Image 1 (cartoon, one colour):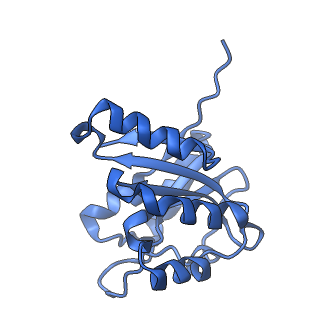
Image 2 (cartoon, rainbow, N blue to C red):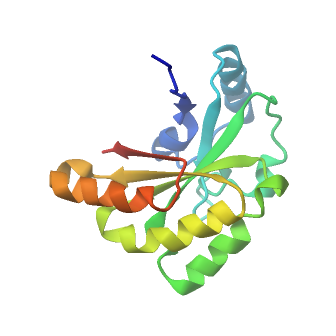
Image 3 (cartoon, rainbow, N blue to C red):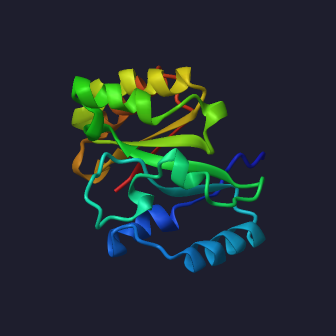
Length: 171
């Protein structure tokens, strides 16, 4: 049996809920050294959210100019997470196009899209835009334990038609 599994570490993105995505440079350097030693392929370095509140650290926005200041080894592939709900309006969808340059001009390789079942109707536009820019795209169905089995199946049957690279469940 062939093992096609991949490891993605989301320590910084998920851990940011505890410190408003404010991580010190020394913590980041130690973390990246450990990731390198452990041969973890993918690192979800944070979100790319439309947050203007300065009390939140740079890892909530993961803007290109911020990521360009960080020294990553060539082995590490970067991912960021976006929330589908943040880009439902036309104005915010236009911003999505601006905040993600073409993949060859970004350190980010994969964009993970967190989506509720109700936001499925917005996914197609978002996925198509990101795929057109040559990103690896992953869709995460949130709060799946609140859904019926038929809803979960319906969600992934529709997402599968979007040619996403990965899709999965997380609660």
